[in-house]
Amino acid sequence: MPDLYTRLVADHLFPLHERMKGHDTVARREALELSQWWPAEQLERQRVERLRRLLEHAAGHVPYFRRIFAEIGFNPATLQRVSDLARLPFLTKELIRSNLAELKSADARTLKRFNTGGSSGEPLIFFIGSERVSHDVAAKWRATRWWGVDIGDPEIVVWGSPIELGTQDRVRLLRDRLLRTRLLPAFEMSERNLERFVVEIRARRPRMLFGYPSALAHIAAYAERRGESLSEAGIRVVFVTSERLYDHQRQQIERAFGCRVANGYGGRDAGFIAHECPDGGMHVSAEDIIVEIVDVSGEPARPGQPGEIVVTHLATRDFPFVRYRTGDVGSIDPAPCACGRSLPLLKDLHGRTTDFVVAQDGTVMHGLALIYVLRELPGVRQFRIVQESVDLVRVELVAQGALDPDLGRAIEQSFRARLGSTVEVVVEAVQAIAPDRSGKFRYVVSRVDAGAFRATRCAAGAARTAPAEVTHA
Image (cartoon, rainbow, N blue to C red):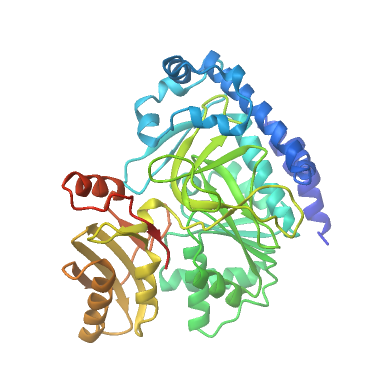
């Protein structure tokens, strides 16, 4: 049962905080907690109506979409079903960069500028209005309550975004104290800081942890190496997001902290897309988010088949995200969840398309095919795989002690067996592998554009006539 202070925060202080910011978060969360149980047909009717209103508003107030709709002869009033979205072109990061001003609604009043770093290092700048903030916070709040915790319960956040860490002014610090939230910097994973994190977790006894899976797995691994158990810290659930959650990370975190891991999927650009419930279903925030899965040619993927995740956010009238290509890979799970919620389910979340590697023959495979090689080798503590080209792969490796030449040869042999016999594999011994500036950690970085590579090979007559199949380790 929540304590009295948690009830004070969840029922009074946080709602007051949101009203002062002009957000209707509380009303929205209450509505979501009802609609999650609606029959699927009722939920779909609401989505179609909201989608039609969003597109009609975009046609009348957003220069970019007014122009696009005119060019393709699209009338939003004719939209009858969610699948009609396929009549519209995709919105990409490149299009947002080149049409930033035109994507703003003429009647927007509360836009705030945001950005994401992106895998290429080139930031994506975009804008978010107060309506979307309210809806995203409400969706996250609903998912938090699925696990028996609430706003106001003691929480430790292991995060690294410069936006969050750069705004620790007095107001922010006061708010965090009132909400019982403590922020720890994810981009400072030195042994000294890991020790401090473990001490702080023990001292604060948070009901929940929130952060990047890689950062929390680092803390868990450190505690296990030191023989320190955190299972008595009173943590009820660990929420992870913003990176792909690997099975071994889930197992390590659950073992070290003695509680379940709840996976979340979304981003600052695309919004809060899906969250895992205690029954294991990855539920889409379907009241606000429409998810499409498309194949390499941009056509709808077959039911249950993995493809790129394309998102339309229904609460983005001020700066519409319509058919936004996320660059992430996943599929729709047709099976219902045991929890009984009618919200659709995502599965096969395999991270960004840059987490896939391309073999010399054009085969596209998930980076797990290489990750598993390194995980099974003795003496490997940490690694990062960088595919510079189809002919060159670098492996940054933190080994226990000096790098054994036999270990390097074993890696080269295994990688060539998967990527091609003439691939150059460079194994680099390093003291530590730093996360990205945001604090995220990526096991695999591919600088190969799989689509462009296939197109080049087809033009040369050297590729298969069918698109390369995505394989999963």
